[in-house]
Image (cartoon, rainbow, N blue to C red):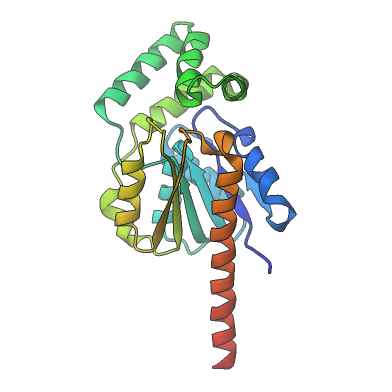
Length: 242
């Protein structure tokens, strides 16, 4: 059984290290590549990912990477064979989050990148020391300019909820029961609105499920991808018979 390539998009302030524990758990059965969306808008990030991605692929995004994934899927190019959305939503930035991001941008532009980085890394890591170290390293390596561009991109994103019924590819939505940044009710809302979606809530996980619960994240993803490959194989056999 050969699966389509898995294209994984990281979150704000993150790189391939966010997905690496899941890739390690998935093993050699799955061909994974991480593409960080580059640009100053969600649309520009989507353009960049599509320019680097294979002709056909399974698309996986987390948090901001989920916004980029939705933008790609909503373009209906036919290239996305299945979609996995981790710890994300389809809503526009709430007013309190917009204010937080504007404050962070101002802080960075006045020379306070380190302070801004400490605020965001402690929030997404829930203060778990080993996770906070990884998140801090990723954010610092990406640098202040990328941090500001990404903050601007997420506060300017559109509400996509009314469009979700046009995404016809199979989708899995993975959330964390302890995610206070993207609470489970936003994951449930995605599943209600997407035509072919199922929900997995990882017990005890916060916002960065691939780092907190990589085995559970990989298990959900592996089961989903195998099911899509089996479905595609069955469809091919039906075509061959007819």
